[in-house]
Image 1 (cartoon, rainbow, N blue to C red):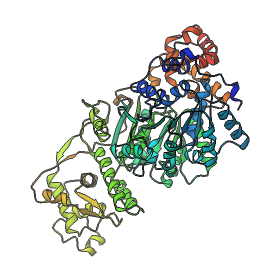
Image 2: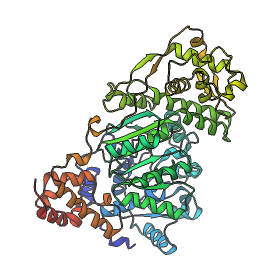
Image 3: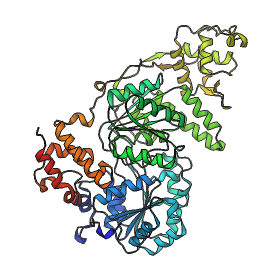
Image 4: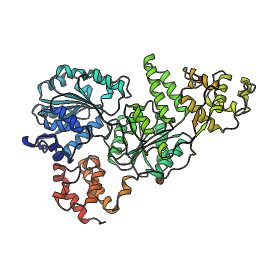
Length: 615
C-alpha cells in the first residue's frame, strides 16, 4: 500500500476541530449523545473509559480525535476481521489507515512500519499480542503517537465473557507512554467488570462515559423451546426471508446440523466454529460480510467486532451463559439503527447443560459462584413477566421509565396462573424420589406412567405417583423450568441432571406462600403483522430504484474487494432514494457522504438516479 496515494482526510489547520472532521470526512452533521464530550476529552490529552452499545458510534470517539491530534492513533483490536473492516471503511473516506496482523506479508508490514515512522498514517490497528512484542513497543517509542484506543476492553476482565490474556499486558501503555492519552471502549460491562477494566488498564483516574445501553430498534423475544428447528424456520420465513442473520448454538455439532437444516430449506447458511479450518472460517465470514441474505450459524466464537450494519436478526437456539453474553451477541443485530430482532428459544435442558459445563470447569469456587449468579440473571430475564428491556437495562445499571412496547412481554403480555398447588406437587415429587432424577422421570411419576423403571425403583408406591394428571407433560416441563429459574430447584452439582431442592423452596412446600407462574404461549408461526415496526425494505416506495442503487453499490464493492456497506450503508441508500439529489451539491447533503465519498461516487450514483424509475 502506497499511503501517499491516499487522499488525506485531515482538514486544514484552521478547520481541524471535531465538528469539521465529522462533517467533511464522515459526512454527519452532528454528534450522537456523549460522542462530542468523549472526543473533547481525548483531544485535550486526557484519558477516558467509554461504555456505549454496539452501533452507538464508539469508533468515532477515537477516529475523530485521531484526525485532530498530531501523530498516529494506535488502535488495539482483538480480531483481524474488525481491523480489516474498519481500515477498509476509513480508506473509503480518504483516511490514511493500516493494520499490522498475520494476514500481511513481511514486505507490507515493513511498508506499514515505515509509514508510521514518517508520519504518513492517521490510524494504525494492531492486535494486543503484536503490540506487546518488544520490537513493536520500540517502534512506537520512536514514532509520534496521538492516542491509544483499546477496543473491546471487556476482554481484559477475567470475569467477563470474552477474556483475552493478552489484554492483561496493556497496562504497559500507562507506564511507557504516560503522556499519550488512552481511551478504552466496550459495549458490555457490569459494574464489577467496569472496575476491573479501569484497574487493569490503569484508568482509575480517567473520566467514565456511560451511554444508555438501550437499543430501541431491537425487538427482544424469548419463547420456550418446543421444536427448535421448526420454530427457527417459522421465524425466519415469516419475518426475515432473504435477510442477513446470525444463529447461535452452544455446541459445534449443533452448529453443523442447524446449518445443514437451513441449507436444506433453501437458505444460504454457513457454519462457523473453532473446529473448522481457519481458511473455511475466513471464507464464511467474508461471504457473510459481502453477500446479501447470508445466515451464519455459529458458536459464540463468531461476531465480536463485526461491523456489518444490516444484520436483521440474531437467534439463539440455546441459552447464553450470561446477560453480558446475551447483550453482546444480540447487539450484533441492527447496528444501522433499523428494526431488527433478537429471538431466542430455551428449555430446562439448556440450564442443565450449562450448569454441568460450569461445575466441570477448572475455575475456582469464587469463579463458579459468580458464574452461577450470571446464569441466574440470564434465567430471570427469560422468565420475567414484565418488560424485558427494562429488566435487561436494570442489570447494567441503566433504567427505562416506561415499558418499551417493543418486546414480546409488552406486545403480548404473558398470562399467569396460580401455580401453588402444582409447585407443591412437583417439589414433593423431587423429595419423595430421593432428589436423584431428572425432569422427564419426575413428570412420568407425577402423571402416573406405568413402566419398568418406575416400578423397579418402587416409585409407583410413593404418595406423589399419579397426582399430576391435570397437567400435560409440556405444562409440567414449564413448571420445573420456572422452579429452576427462580431458584427453588437446582441441578445436581455432580452434573447428572438430577433436580434437587434448595432452601428457598421450604416456604412453598409448607404452604406459607403462594406462587404465580407464567403460562407458556401456544407455539404458532409468527407473521410480520405481529411486529410493531416494519423492516427497512418495507419503507421503500420505489423498489426498482432501490435495487438499482443496491446493484450499483455491489458492483463498486466487488471492484474494490470490500463489503457493500463500506461504500454506503443501507440508511444512506434509502436517503438517496428518498431525496433524489440531482447535483453534486445536493448529493453532499446526504447523511454519510463525506468529501472523499462525494468525489468517488457522487457522479456514479447521480447517473443511476437519472436513469432509474421515479416514484
